[in-house]
Length: 360
Image (cartoon, rainbow, N blue to C red; front, side):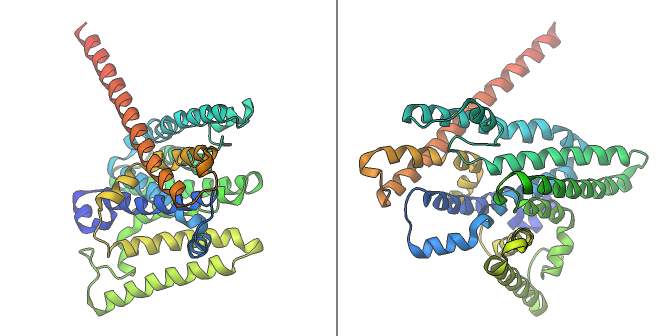
């Protein structure tokens, strides 16, 4: 994102979007916690209503961030997606799967060699959450392939015309390939694997068209909601997103459930984006949670599962929940710190080898 756009849309900066994701990763933590213990009926009702929508901002802001980088850096960024995005996610995910394997062995939780192997690519799991990792990796790969194809199709064009046409062609290819991915997952996985993929696609689309979308929602050329018309549009759009999302979640059943959820995912994300305009982000606490989203998401079930083997905590309860939360934060922080140190060591070692080779 350019500096001018950062000043214009402060609620869409990297720090602000991390803060929003930080709120929702805590919601996901509470939702996962109810797998192992009972929660208050009011909380249960709210979480059941939100359901998979609680992860849609993760997908939306991922799609938005990828498209912002493509617009700013072009094909140089696209070519880096397999390494930076795909391998970057695996670098976080695979060591965590190994931790779950060790935990299962220590606790006597059985798993097969096939289950372990498929868990490494996030198709199955060893008690860890995996579907989001599998889907985001697939979407990153499809994004990369779509723009590689688009670049070849638009090779004969030059200048700004080529960039615009390449991005439009890339988005079209991504949308078509994502629909095919949904079709495949429809017959091979539970519905939660694919019913929020539209959030990522909307993030890509939103990045490319945010000025027009936000103008329709009441924002002026300076990125602010002002005046009677602007405020009215803003309020009406927020209410529309909230109301239609609620109606879809309440009444979409049977054959309408999946397409309804795909639509609700888009409206929910748009509603969150608009509401975040009113919140003085970035917040240092929620931002930390958002910046450690992958680690928290992947590791939170380790304390949730292992603490159940302690007699005093085996039935859950408030003490169990608090300890789980604290241990999840510690695990995420330690895991992130170790991973960062290893990454920096490898970079310095690689740079030293290159420097040595140049001297020779």
